[in-house]
Structure formats: C-alpha cells, structure tokens
Length: 246
Length: 274
Image 1: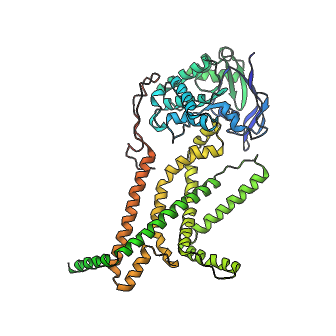
Image 2: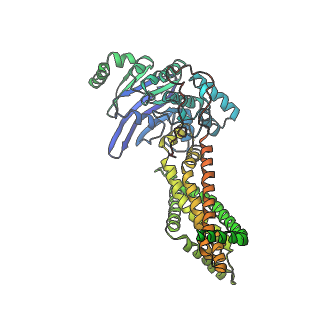
Image 3: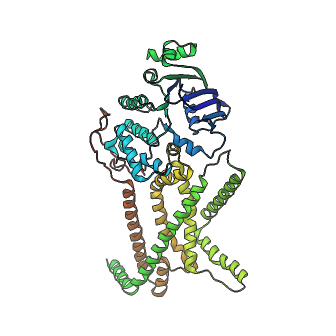
C-alpha cells in the first residue's frame, strides 16, 4: 500500500441546524483517483470544500501527512498551496491573463522567480492545450478552455493532491470531453485526485476508488467494479439505476 | 438680438479685464478637486478594506477586539462626514482646530485656509469612497476569493492581487462621479475664504455688477472642466480594460468545436455596463 496523504476522521459540518456532513471517515493514498458520487445535496461538494478549508468543519480531524490541520489556522495558506482545487465555476482571476493566472500563485505564495514561474506555467498550459491563449483574459475564452486553464493554474503550484469540485457541471456538453481528457491524462500520470462528479463514465473508467455519498454520510465505497458492478446497499442501487436509465 | 450683443460684449469685457482671475480660480478649483479626490480615494480604500476584513470565530481575542474597535471608528467617521453638509464641515474644522490648538499653545494659532480646504474635501470624499469601495469589494464574485485562497493566498495577497484590481476597475465610474462632484462642490469652500472659481465670480461681480455675464463665464468654465475630466476618465477606463482582442499563438489541439471563436469582450459588445 502506498503512502497515505490525507486522512479524514469523524468529520461533521452543519449549517445552522442543518447537518450536511455526518461523521465522515475516509483516506486518500498517493496516486489514488477517488471519485465522489451522489445525488445533489448529499454533501459531496461540502466535503471537498471542507478538505480545502473553504468551509470550516464543525468537528472532526483532517490529517495531512500525520498532522491535524484543523488545530491551528496558521498553516492554512501553506496547506492549501499543497492541495490544489478546481472549481465548478472555474474562478479564474478576471483581472489577469491566462498566463498571469497560472503565475500569480507561484510568485506570491511559493515565492518563485518570475522567469521560473513563467516556465512552469507554460509547461502546464501546454499540457492542457492552452498554450495558444496565454494572452487572453478569462472573459475571452470558452468554458472548457477556462476549466483547462484552472487545472493548469492548480498544477503549476505542484500540488500533492488535486481536488475537483464538479469540474464539468457548468460546461456545455461539447466541452465536457476536452476537460475529462485532461483529467484522464493526469490520472494516468499518477496524480492524486479527489473528484466530485456526475460523470459516471469517468468515475467508473478512470478512478480506482469510488465513494457514494447519500444524505451526508458515506453510504458505500470501494473499487469502481465493486460499486458499479455489485453495489451492496439499496440506496446505491437506486442511485445508479437512475443514471443507467438516462 | 441686441441683448445677446450686449451679453457678448460684457463677456468679452470680463475676459479681457478679469480673464486671469477666472483662470486662477479654475486652477485652484481643479487642483483642490483632483488632490482631494485622490486623497479621498486613498482614505476610502483604506476604510473599505478595513470594513471587509473577515472575522472568524477562531481569531484571538486581541484581534477580535482591535478589529471591532477599528471597524466601529471607521463606521462613525463615514456616518458623520457623509451625514453633514460639507460647508458646515469646512467651518467646523477651520474654526474647530484653532479652538483647541490655541487653548493648548496659549496664543492664537490659525489653521491655514488652503490646508483646511484640502483637508475637508479629502475627508468628505473619503467618507463616500469608503462605502463605494466596500460595495465594490462586496460585488466581486466570492469565487474570486475562493480561487485565490485555493492556491494558498492569504487575505492580504488575495486583496492586493485579485480583489482590489477588480474593485478599482468597477468603481472607476464612481471615482469619476466623485471627481466631478468635487469640482463643483469645492465652491462651498468660499465660506472659509478659499478662492476657487466661485469665489472669483463673487469677487468680480461685487466690483462690476455683471452678475449674469460672469455667471455665464463661470458656468462655461465649470462645464469645460467637468467634460474634460469625463473624457479623461473614460479613456483611463478603456485603458484598464486592456485590448479587446488577443493573439492566438497556434491552434488549440484539444478543443474541437471551441477555440476558434474569439469571444467578444464586454467593450466590443458595445455594452455600457461597468
């Protein structure tokens, strides 16, 4: 078994009286591609946002390399720079060009030299096929292109683990493919990924671990073959049946 | 038509005799308006940024207390200087400061009139700008902040690199508004003896009783100044938007249907929104 990067234990999150996550336990090992699936409102995105501390968990522990990052707020920016995040709504910086988007984190957070940051940014922009557009502003490119830039921006920070929060949900159908292709390539190269997705084909074919969430708890988890091929729980069966019918 | 001929000859006479006084007045006005708007923007940015500092439960007690006090002070400042007439603020500060400094130093100490004028207009503009900047910061999509946080930026880095540049662009029309309002409203500074354009007008008509012709000249000069400022501000906005087009270096290999279309920018669409 490979090295454990992230371990979540007894994680709960409530918004007021509404308990969105209940006692979540799971872990991520190096090289894992984990897909989190489940109906809307089941807490998938909240779980991902808690892992990146965009939401503060109500209780529980997030252990990153043996250290509970919830103990103090001091190390949060540094931790986040190791945990990349790709958003549903891209969240590219509107005041910067594509290239600047991929450089600003490197120069300001990692304190890399400008020339070095540019080299790294260009490398990852090439990887996602966005090299031709380095001078464009986010408003000038399409959704699929924005998401690929967002992936390059996250990669340029050399994260240990990359979180994807429904990366294709805001895209037109014809642009979903180009983003999934980039994600598949990353998975093949051994990137550790945690993907909240509604793309069942991606979850089944690309990931090596699938987590099915229902109503704030992890209902079932296992390899894609186990979860998709032979689901144990009735909720999982119902959920997957709905997707097959579509 | 005779009346227009008379008006014209009066105007010519006014310009011939007092043209340089009008120019001096216009210069004082524009200088005061520009400097005070710039200073007001600075004050406004500082106040607006302070008011949007996030507070979290995990902050130390010390930080919580300091933040609460500072935010309260900013709030009071904004309410006081937004909620009272500038003409009164001028009197308040021009006579108020010496009231205390004289008592402290034992003799009469007067506040310099120019200094008082610059101070009052700056502070007044700052109070309005504080709310403008706060609104500008709040209007930026929270996703921008999340995007910045997700790559490890702290609050200061996020503000400096992502939020404030976008806020600056969005509130440019409001900064322009303030500049133009200041060009006109600095006229109330005559109350403490600052000789800007309106004071010049008052002085001139006091001597020659050409009330209407002088008003025409003064109106024209004010209008000229505000229109020129509008044009300059619009040019700055366009500059901030950057080029409407960009060069595609080669072809995009991943996108099949997208990637060849050059999305029109907001500017190119002819949209007037900002």
